[in-house]
Image (cartoon, rainbow, N blue to C red; front, side):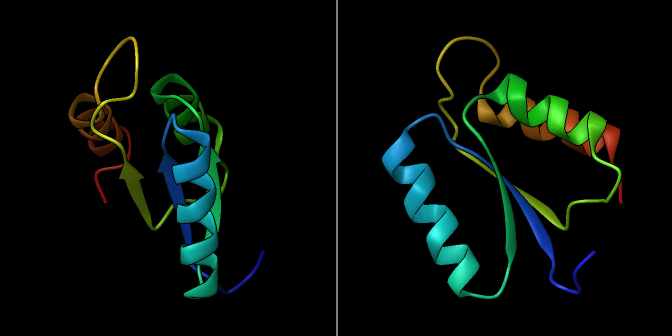
Length: 79
């Protein structure tokens, strides 16, 4: 495990997701990216190491939006 803070990014647009990953990594963060809200939720559930934060798109295509996903993340990991 690295000493860097790990952020979870949920973004359904590939170009935006890639740009966010590159920007955050150049800022010194480890980044785990999800292409959907469902994938982001599964990563939160399955992750052994805690994420320092979640950055999510508001409109994540079909299903729950980014606001709802953020509420679920807060319920799963209240800290």
